[in-house]
Structure formats: structure tokens, C-alpha cells
Length: 458
Ligand SMILES: Cc1cc2nc3c(=O)[nH]c(=O)nc-3n(C[C@H](O)[C@H](O)[C@H](O)COP(=O)(O)OP(=O)(O)OC[C@H]3O[C@@H](n4cnc5c(N)ncnc54)[C@H](O)[C@@H]3O)c2cc1C
Image (cartoon, rainbow, N blue to C red; front, top):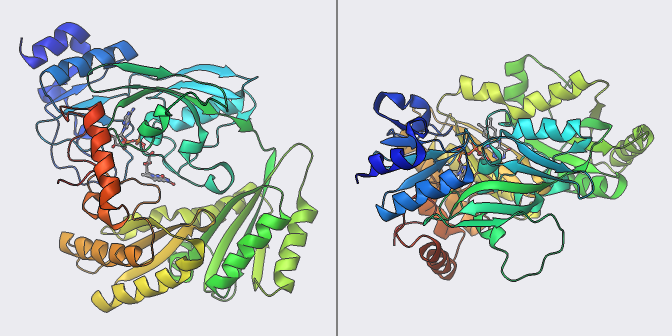
């Protein structure tokens, strides 16, 4: 039987979209680098249907691109013309919140924000949090091992997944919805799928850790004169505050651009570095005295020149809106946002050298830096005057060559997808790449799952 007939017979017409039924939405993730529509879209609503779909595609050696919320920034969910897209958008919902184990069992297609709200309703915090929370899905978060803004306290997505269910290329369902912290029973297959960007299996369900829900937060915007002082401030925050939940650093050019775009002014003079420090508070702990003592000590030791404590949620939101910088994308349409990591102590020198190299190559370009520095993650934001694809390629070359020299990683949290695939060797050895290829061949011998993503061609 022909492939589409077989899929329709097994899954039903409503699961299989073809021709005009395929909307533009399935063309690209948020990197806007997707060029083709898939030739069919499958929208299974059960794990068994995912399994049947993959078994049929595998028999036909048909390539399949898993799609979540399509908020990815690495081109990982982009189909090629001959691919089938398998979207998890109809497999949604929270299956269980286990208060004793402090876990949530959730379907892969559930939007992150829906899962966060369900956790909160049950009196817990779901620690995974990203700016794309309204659209990204739990399956996509796990497949990309997403980072976000609470990593300094709760770790990356990998650290918050206790159990996982995934379907491999031949349709086999690997279900390990484990709820325990300790489970030393052979290879930890769950970790293989986390961060594999749809190349090893389709994630269908997960057991996520839940944490105590903070009752409030203390938030400050601090001004510092050097990167070394920022690093000392981080050390002091970890020593003096009970629960540092964010330590976000903006270089002056990033801060000024976004504050001006939003019409916000915080300090009378410009400062080279601006830092958002946040502390989670629990129960009746108001944290005020501890937070003020921390800032006073930072002033006394000369680590900061100025600081503002948010007096309301609105004021804290204002600090964060500058850091999120969403207006930047609109004002600089050709903006390239690179996501890298390296040892915290080296980031200041990297940013200085990278900035010089970019401006030497692209005089007059916008070049700025910000990052989750507490997690050793730096974002480089660059817009050249011409904004061409060639410029974007040159930017990658300059930034990633320097990352290699500094012993860093070309992807801290966005993943590899297609956009960073050709640079994977900057951060991984040939031996590591060879083992990755063996794993891929073992789990997906026909190479149907997300071909062309993550691993560079041999
Ligand atoms: C405004 C904004 C803010 C962002 N902030 C952050 C941030 O702070 N930190 C961060 O890490 N990222 C961030 N991102 C990037 C993005 O939101 C994350 O990478 C997110 O985890 C992707 O989830 P998704 O469901 O949209 O996945 P998609 O974009 O649909 O897919 C991403 C990859 O995962 C695969 N995939 C998706 N679902 C599955 C599944 N069920 N099984 C197997 N493979 C699957 C796809 O094939 C693809 O390779 C941001 C993006 C935007 C637009």
C-alpha cells in the first residue's frame, strides 16, 4: 500500500494532513530559517498512534521531523520538502500531579505555561521557565534540554526530568515514567533522549520534578564598573542570599538600547554592566533585611556603584522587560542572537574580544551582550547594516572560532538543529562525534528521524 494510504488507514483521516490542509505554521521554527512545507503532517493524539505512525514510516524509509511548539531557534523542527512532520500538538494534558513524590506526569504536546499553571494550582513550582512559555511544549523543552531564566537555582531541563517515555524509529515504545530520585538500574536511557532534538526518538510523556512554590521574590537592578566585579557580586550573592533565583547580566550597549526603546530610565548616569539579582522567598520570610545587607556589603566592597530594589511587581517587570529585549527584534530585523557558554571567569574577555572583532569586520554594526551569567551562558546580539545571509555566516565564523579558542560551547541552551550543525566540531571531539553516530545508527538504523539535524554529514 502507498505510504499515505497506509497512514490514513492506520491512524484515520483526521490525523493525516496533506495538500491545502498544511498551513504555513509547519514550515519553520522561530529562527525563520525553514524554507519548505512538509509533504504531510501527522497529528497523533495517543502514544500508540505515534508508535504506529513511526513503524509505518520506518518500513517505507520515510523521514519524519518531530514538531513541538515551533519556538526553537536552531532550525531543528524545520522540515525539508520530502519530510513528514509529526506534531505533538494534539497530545496534551497533565496526567497526574503526585504531591507526595512532588512530580507531574505530563504529555509532550502540553504548552509549558499550561503545565506551570497546573503546578501552581496544586501549590508547586514547575522550575522550567522560558520566555516562549506560552507556545513551547514540554516535549520540545526536553528535546532541546532548554535552559531559561531559573537555571542558576533549579538546573536545566535535564535536571528536572525524573521519568521519560519515548518512541524510537521502528515504533518501539520505551516507557520509564520513573518518579524516584534514585534509580540505578543500568544505562539511563532517559538522558539519551533529553537534548537529542528529535533525532533519536519522539518524546511522548515525562515525569517532571516539582519544587516548593516561592511566596514572593526580592529583585534588584545593580550597576557595576567591570566584569570582574560582576563575578565577585555573583559569589557574594550565593554566599549571602538564601535562594538566588536569577543573576542576569547586561552589557551597557544592550541595556541602553532596550531601556531607551522601552522609554525606561533607571539611573542618572550610564554604567558598563547592569545586573538583575533575584532571590526566591518562602512562607513568611520577607527577605528584606537579608537582601539589603547583601547590597550594602556589595557597596562597601566596591562591587557595585548603584542599585535599585524593586518596590513592586511592576518595577521588577520593568527590569525584566529590558533584559528580555523583545523590542530589539522588531527594531533590528536582521538581528542575529548567538547563544554560547564558557567558564564564567572567561566570559568578560570573550565579550571584549568578540565585540572588537565584530566591529572591525562590520563597522557601525549593533553589537551587544547579555546573559544568564550565573549559568555561564552568554548571548551575543549583532545586527549589521546590510543584514545579509553572508553577514550572518561571517558572524557565526567569528564568534564560534573565538568560542573554540576560549574552550567554550557553541550552544548553551538553544541546541544545534541545522543552524549550528556545521560548527559542532568546534565544541565536540571527533571521537565524541563518532560515538554519537553509533548511538544514532543503533536507535534509528534507517535514519528516518530528523535527518540532517544535529550531526554534520560525514
Ligand atoms: C521568545 C523566545 C524565548 C526563548 N527563550 C529561551 C530560553 O530562555 N532558553 C532556551 O533554552 N530556549 C529559549 N527559546 C527557544 C525555544 O523556546 C526552546 O528551544 C524550546 O524548548 C523549544 O520548544 P518547542 O516545543 O517550541 O520545540 P520546537 O521548536 O517545535 O522543536 C525543537 C526541537 O525539538 C524537537 N522536538 C519537539 N518536540 C519533540 C518531541 N515531542 N519529541 C522529540 N523531539 C521533539 C524538534 O524536532 C526540534 O529539533 C526561546 C524562544 C523564543 C521564541
